Image (cartoon, rainbow, N blue to C red; front, side):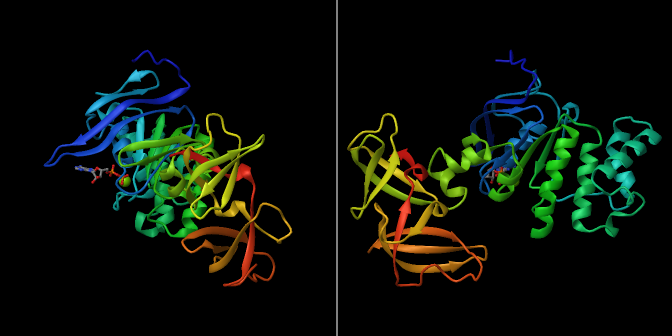
Length: 366
Ligand SMILES: Nc1ncnc2c1ncn2[C@@H]1O[C@H](COP(=O)(O)OP(=O)(O)O)[C@@H](O)[C@H]1O
Ligand SMILES: [Mg+2]
């Protein structure tokens, strides 16, 4: 299948499989297929142990492929040693050489590739300017903060101008404020260099805020590939809906259909609605997915509302989460923005009416 000569594709993985030998062997990647576009900020997102690092290490060439193939810009690299792949890696723990200056650290990789000293230092200086550390070249690593050291590690990885930069949770050792600041920094670096970034994280916010596209993974399998809003608004399955953002899930049966809507009965007898969906008919069993911020509190004159009682309130600063009891064992989480005084919309024990736009409903065949 190596006839993949589309140069706008940076990386093609066909049925990639990785089994680590042992007793028992560990199937870290089952059969992953994906295409990453040239110039793309592509993110592998999933919980710890789902195979993200394994997939990166296969692309880098640090691990042998058990089965399947990898194509980089039209060339099958499945059996190419790591040092001749046009790929570089930034790890979670930036490992700068402590006895070298910052400039020497960034120039190191270039020197090893045979670039003359003066030229290597000139490129290294440009790379330091790119990460806004142009004045720090003569310092030693221990004279820099953690965030600055990670930016040096980025400059070092970018210096040989790889076609693809692999980033394995590069922000996870930084504190929250710095991590957030580095998001836009990384995005800018990717844009300015035009290098394809393959970024690994378990942090959904990080993934949503930086990526052109995301592959959501679990247990060695890719669950869905899409843009951040596709992943969030149209999750392919329950895992994706649950892992990214908050969601209410309801098992339901299609009750009736009308010209515009499908009516679903959930456990407890309440009716929820979605727009018409091809292929769904009365009697079908489905799972309904509803994001808490897409539900509105309304007054009791509005038609087609759900009636419930507030059973829990969690104040989150900019928003408040309400758990509404619809019946004895049926609840719905509703998220509302806080305005002005931060007073809750309703208090515990109060009766409320909830309105749900049918368009907000996601429906999965059960
Ligand atoms: N060198 C190895 N030998 C054996 N098992 C490994 C090795 N590296 C990773 N694994 C296992 O493979 C699975 C995927 O690991 P990894 O790719 O590191 O996941 P992630 O980066 O998503 O946390 C895990 O079950 C992990 O324990
Ligand atoms: Mg990992």
